Length: 389
Image (cartoon, rainbow, N blue to C red):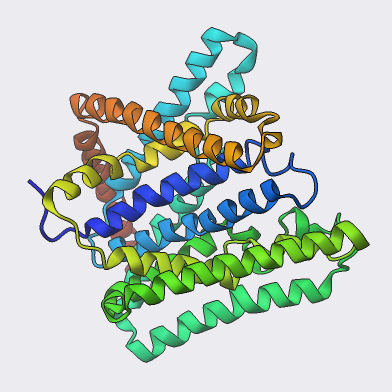
């Protein structure tokens, strides 16, 4: 039985975005892109794939805003995610420690219990911060009219996309490849988009799309056209700047500006894909398949990004960039789909185990307990303040 009110197009985007995230990690964390020398057909093809998938994280944050706006704030949601992250960290640390005791030390075992403080996964850490602010963001969205909300979105784009890119490109010497910009430095604390601030901006935008039902007003073909044009434009700029750097030694930092979460082309790709999927209608059978796999999307992220699993991935992909365009592409696609499917099935087992252990019930009890403590503390604080007046 499927939920008739649920937007399964958004759930499908969760699946597609996670497949894209796995692709980015196979290409990047597998060192596949770094191992390609010179501008070759393999270089162009792999970077086309990288750029086409780079909007995935933005899409996830947009989904958070679209789904989260209008919902009741519950701490139990983030508590469950925390338990899931700890579960996988401890599980894989134990597995690898049994295989090779030297691969996991005691510090790693201990910090696995505190994934946010130890920053095990940047997205979960940033999302945790975003989650705590969602009631206030939703309240702000409720109180804003269309004009003010639109102006704020425009300001976000101007300041955190256009201004950031243009000001950093102008400020730093393009011939200095060791410039802090190329190593992830970012004005306004964005850290190239790997930050709670950028996720908040995307959340705010997703809530904007939902509140004013903008997805219903844009035709799918426009979304496809924007996505394709922006991907190809980014690829052309990537090839041009790489060629200039290879032949002149200049324009090095420009290369890094082209593929960032906040660059205009990547941002437009995110919005185009999001609107396209938000408009999709799914049949009942398709909805069941989508629902089955979408619930494991976060689990796929946590499993495949465990540091020891990433090392296996690097070993697996070593040297394969020299096998030609078609074979490399097929190998990457097959690797991505296998990782996604296997991790999804592992997470299904985890879901059954969590149901048996009643993790959701325990999370809700923890939520109620925390709310009770906060309410009692605030009441006491108000009494103290009233007595001092």
